[in-house]
Length: 607
Image 1 (spheres, rainbow, N blue to C red):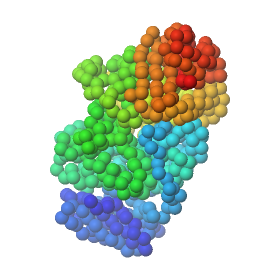
Image 2 (image 1 turned 30 degrees about the vertical axis):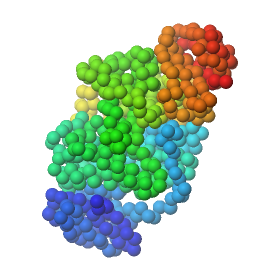
Image 3 (image 1 turned 120 degrees about the vertical axis):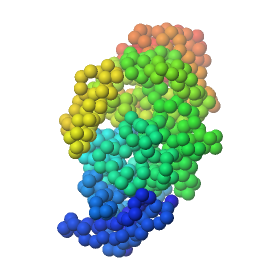
Image 4 (image 1 turned 90 degrees about the vertical axis):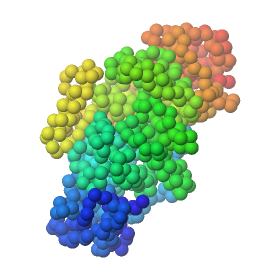
């Protein structure tokens, strides 16, 4: 595997390497910084394996260039930077020039991750990596241990969710480019935060994509919801696989990224005996051995397929963990009473207990939404194999009004849901602003140049919402206002219920870390049942134990304690958390009658 892209070698030398198996000739055109015109042209000799390669003198970092294909000047398919957007020239990046200060950084173990998902463009008013650094101390104080940033690969325009990227190696210019991302990651590591980067290996964006000009990156064998499928098992697929595997290792090597979140792997179609995902997992494992520490792969998957998170030694795909949609859907449907779309498969209290105990809710059961049986059991797999959440960019942004949970349920229900999330035996993920009850929408937005494409996106999203029963057109994704309305309102967390909720989350995370029975992700040391509109959980680890009672109903529920002895650590209905006031004694024993307030939880620690 050759290192593709413009590799700056120092001493004003740069090596240009391209995989383009269907091309006969290729040259690189260096752009003059003073005139903006081509100042020199260099032919790239080809090799039998489809690579073109040349070393060029008198090339400086930040030099701009195009490749010349039969007189057509187009950017590098492995461009490291597109300072003038997707249609402009590529730029040389000297990765060795950045001064990292994380030499002794070992990363946060997966089982200890408390993840915070954020979108760089809407996280701050400025929408840059530099501005985001200023808020990292707040997240550390909250109890976060890992930051997950939505995709930053170069997309068309200045605003986008990031899933329309077309240059997988280039850092978005409007966020601060390569230098900005490195500063952000370095700052995170200085503060003890791991960084997870969201990458998209299932499709490419619709505007500015040049990969197909160089390589057979697409296949007609399959079709994804986003258009043409990436070619992972058709002719020349070996080179396409190498391209994306090299991309994954590139983020880890040059940007010190600790883990990758792989977008929608159910959109990766691959019938090879050794799948792309397994090949990727093996490559990352080799990289981890070389670096002497573990780098992680976290998949988004709606397949409920245990093979995704089984190790390669057990013929699995080798993903270290995966997002759990079932956990989200189960809690969301019970709290909101929504039953449209995929929520029609959920809404029963027993499904929350199953998600908490077994992982997948649908593990072979009939799914009314899919109109078929779905999934396979995952109850024997380690708890750290699942990342759980109450909200994320998809579950908020793909709603008609892009409402957050704070706009759908009461304050008491927000606190109840937070307890279910943080005190679960899985890896919790918070979506930016969730910790203080942000009520600004997180709309879908984009900044394409082609008016026909913009109209197609508007029409497509409207059609998608019809299946959920939303008939009016959604907010215009191309309007600047739609983007600006999605920015966080950080001042809210300084007052009222938002301040209370922030302190509430902080306390939850402190308890999770401090109490061994909560800190250790061990579903085998858990008893859980649904009873009288309550979910009752006991968790044990060595000499530590906890007793958690969650009331998902709108009425008080009385239950007799079956916990030997315990001290009350937290009651979400306490007046300190702006609730109606706890009805429980500070200490309980087995047989005591316990009254649980509506839409609340109480946590006891064994003594």
